[in-house]
Image 1: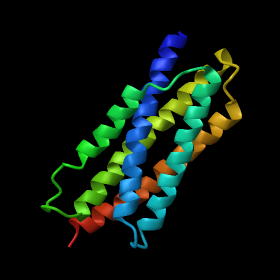
Image 2: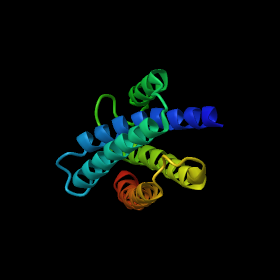
Image 3: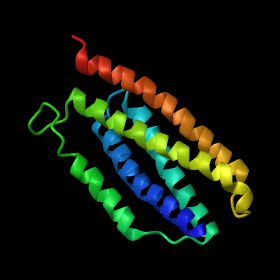
Image 4: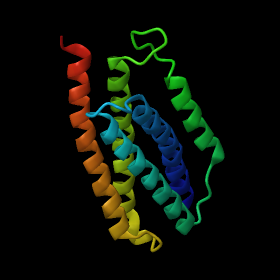
Length: 160
């Protein structure tokens, strides 16, 4: 069973690499925008902190990092930049919406990870239930903030 846990956690580490790169890009693309900039900067910082927390959990469980999955996660975020956004070479209101929706997907996956680890914590004394509950709550809070940002981004992108 530990073999499967290691695979599962490394899958999430790869996803967190994608999510962190996306969060940094979204924050950078919205720097200077009073509505989106600070909110996305905060989320990017929290995602980085959560990713560090995942690495600490892996270390406590004796799970090594799968560099291939991390590299694939990094490359996936770079490839996603090629998605058409209605502009040839620049950021558009659609770009913001798509980035926020991508962050929502990633944060939802992270939320699921924390819930799963809470569900199996009794089998792994190395897991800190209180820390996992805090991570799960932060992911829930991030989702709520991203839903609000998504609505604002949609209004900007699609309403005259």
